[in-house]
Length: 319
Image (cartoon, rainbow, N blue to C red; front, side, top):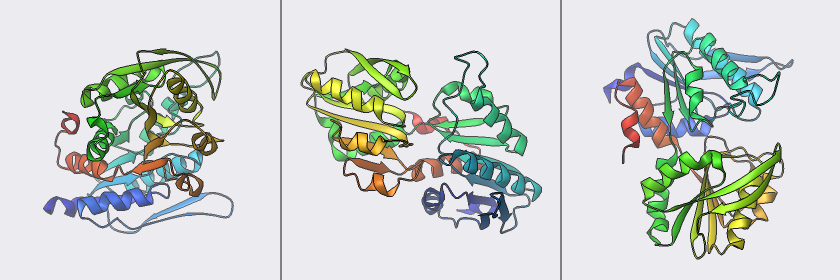
């Protein structure tokens, strides 16, 4: 694999296990770097090997603690550029602040755009991201963005487990905002779809109002890009079961799992929650038998290979 001679893949502290899987898939060694925190909280980064003229990929989710991991990514980009890397690609499995993507009220920021500006100003030449909360975030960057869809990972898992062979299998969008994502997922699986219509009276509080579609006697699979407090999924699962669903499961790319998310899932009608490793699971999450974690390593590794070889990334997602 001669192309690997000019490739260097570095990891931030938020994505070390995922980066190890990516490097294993590419049959390369993770590049050496040192990332530490001074006693006053400042982050210190040192690139541990020559990157002059190299194609550098920096992998780090801006997951909780969001500010630390974001700053770590920015400093790593700056260090690589100052070490004369030919191209620096920021690989962001989970993009923090993505939900602050528009002005819903007066005098509020568009923080997702601010983060894009920071990453660009730090010196990134390209972005590789997984399941951004809203597709328009790609337009916040003035540099190329490759947007990966984790649905291919879920489809492969569902095929291997035989779950989608059941003629009563149904894809459910947990809210109106996820309809497009759920429809594409249902089309890929050749399955019908239903929609949960809900209202959110305030942040992190969801109230299910109606189910659009017939779910009686169906095995329901909800799809979303992330799970935060799990309030939406748990209320939706309760509503689906009350309307005659045989079982309810969920797929979500990013397991944020804040607040009482783990407790909510453990006590919910959900039989299984399938997530990816864009964010490492806590010990509490790992102890819950309902949670299954799939790896994004192979998907990201193939995307990195294609970016490095100047090949098409979008063809990864063709049926």
